[in-house]
Image (cartoon, rainbow over all chains, first blue to last red; front, side, top):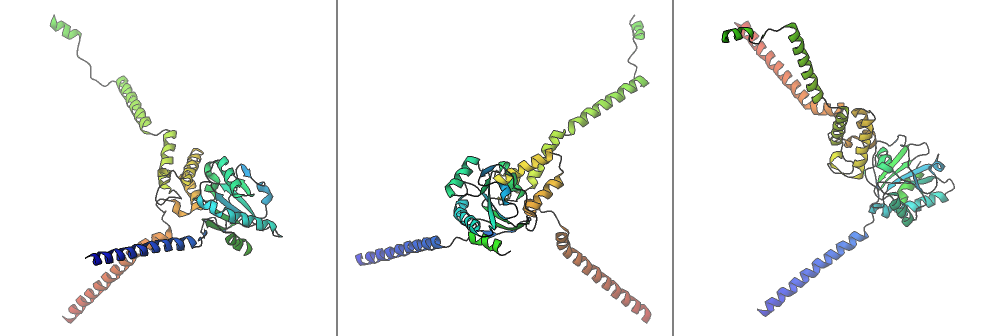
Length: 181
Length: 155
């Protein structure tokens, strides 16, 4: 009787250990999965003239200095987790573009439904030096057809929208668009 | 005495004199004007109704299946603000919806507008069915007629 009870306890322990190991292994695999990054998404704006960018300047150089360049327009918010995830990638992209001989693309960030103090705090925290605009009333985001941040648009020097990314964008994804044309 | 009094104060004259007809006409006009002004919405009420109808017609862009009217998402609030501004500025419903479609696509509508292609797609099975039935009916009629003609010829 005692022997059978011992056997049952051992089986139970082994089963529990197996389940625990499985849970830990799943968590490790999930954590090590590379982030899928942003999805390139359709928009009626593709191939059309980009809507005007307007709004009080939050930080960075004035908007007029970017005329005639590739412009990457990123809609962000301090309350958006994915925006924090993509911030370093955007900064890396902006810095590499500034270093390039042609100075190909400029980054413009637009605060999406975010009070200016919090948006400024986010820009400071993430070390952004890009042009950043406030969007009171969300009318700039509406003109660009933004659903929720982060969303990133690439505008060619001729003023036409050539790409839209939904989710945390990577520097390589932006470089692929800017470099391919 | 009582008889005399009755003669001096005759009963009310129920004849429709021109003057009475005029008063009656005026009364009818007043009643109609009051009724119409009571039911017709003022410009302000009409704008509010248009705004509400548009907000129910438009989908919140960042929600699964909620109208702008039912959502408090920032994108829905921005659209509600845009609709309000445009309605008060005198824009038509068509202009407002068309602008939003050029930004968000057809998915901005709770009920997608029917296009010619979609209409054809929906109507095609019925059209094909009607053609098949008509052809079948015509063939059956021709066979029956031929048989009848053949029968009468034999006789």
